[in-house]
Image 1: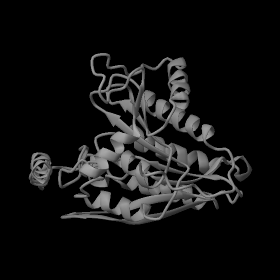
Image 2: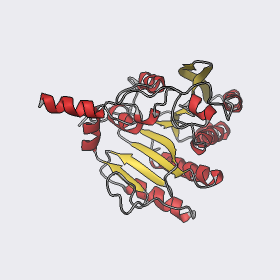
Image 3: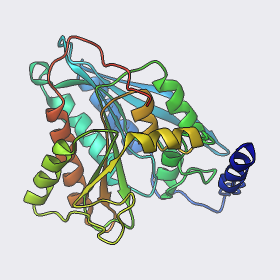
Image 4: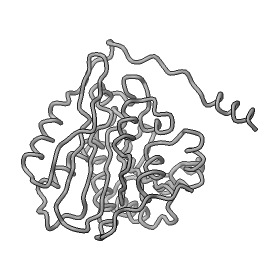
Length: 294
C-alpha cells in the first residue's frame, strides 16, 4: 500500500516550470482598478478598501485588494466573492468591480448581505494578460500544494473564517456557453434556476454531451463530496474545492466563455451573482457553520 501511494505521488509530481522572464510585457495597468476601488471606498461608509497581502515579483509589486462591505444591518449572511484568479480573463474582474459600484450606490436598508470581495487575485497575470502567475502556477488549481504566494495568501486570509456563500468568478477559453459549478450540494435546484435565468436572456449554455466526467451538462457541473474528500487527500484541491472543505457549505463557480463579447460575459456573471446572492440572502442570527469534512 505504501508503495502504491509512493507511486501515485511520483506520478502526480511535476517539476516546477521556469518563471516568466522580462520578455513578457505588460498589456494593462492596475492604476484604473486602484482608482475605481478607492473612489468606491471614499463614497460609501459601508465599503472599506483594505488588503490581505502583497504580490511581489522581480520588478513587480501590487497590493492584494479586499473590499469589505458591511451595511450594519443585523443578521445578514456573509458572502465571499473571488475574481481574477486567471489573468487572461477580464469579465470576472469587471463583474466584481461592477458589484462594488452597485454596493456603493445601494442604500444600507436594501442590502442583502455582508461581503468580502477579492476583485483580482492574479494581479501579475492580469497586468500581463496571462492565465498563470509569474511563476507559471495556475492559482485556481493550487489549493492542495500551495506553490503560489497567491494561494498561500488566500489560505492565510481564510483561516478561521466562515461564509454562508462563496462565489468564484471564472472564464475559460474552451467554454462554448455559460455554466455553473457546485460543490458537495445534495440538490441542483438553485443552479437550475440560475441556468434558466441565463438562458431566458438569450445567452448560450454549456453542454459537453460527449464528456460526462466532470463536464457541464445543461450548464451545471455538480462535484460530489466524496470527490472533494479524495482530492483533499491527494493534495489536488482547487480554490472552490478548498473553500467547500474549509470555509463554507455553499460554494459555486460561475464560468463564462472567453469567445463571447465582453459585455455578454459581464452580463452573465452579474446575473448569476445577483441571483445567487438573492437565493442565499435570508437573514440568519447564527454565524455560518463549518462545512462538514466528509
